[in-house]
Image 1 (cartoon, rainbow, N blue to C red):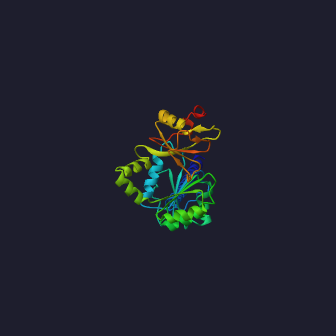
Image 2: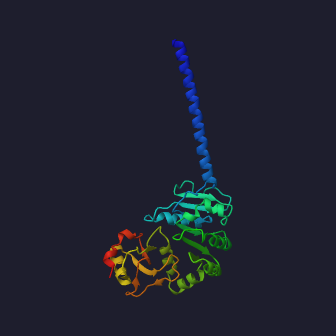
Length: 283
């Protein structure tokens, strides 16, 4: 009968609405769970690949580092993963390019696997103190892939010497306050030049570019003229590995540059390898 059919239809509608409500509730719970995990740093990033990991948190400095990375508009697109040990929530939750992981330790193997340390392309270590930076660098130096570049910052220069005795794949920097003060005293404006070269937010910045494989031997002078004329960039020197421990700054014009060498230059924006006419530079 019509009444029975209508009643059955009402039952189905109520059941459908109830099921829809359950699905909405489950979806809401899932979204809430994911947001909470992202906010608290409990999310698993073991699936990440070719990413940047920043170990350590400093209220002002870490934000500047991320701003500088993102300001390089021609950089290779890599997600940034901030790893901390502090009890804190995601400080960059509104930024879709920055992930957040709160670890119990920077040296625990399981925790390092959670941030996919073996698949990272770039690593910055800026611990709470030099001891944390040192132990973290020592731990991860053998866990990263061969082409991964690690940067570590120290206040104590003796820590740099100690670390380089054991780890050759880490580029260490230290506070050069004495050198900067003397340079500014003897050559006024030197500190401003250094600030300009380090910041991607304004003006010319220091970049690097690896000479691609397959390129024949070139002379530094030829490269220097090409970069200035074609890209308005100034070559500063040539390094032979990522850590640049044996860099040749301002080499003679007949200095030989080969495939795999790394060119350091200053420019308003990054010069990509594909933008350089390498064939015209070969001897």
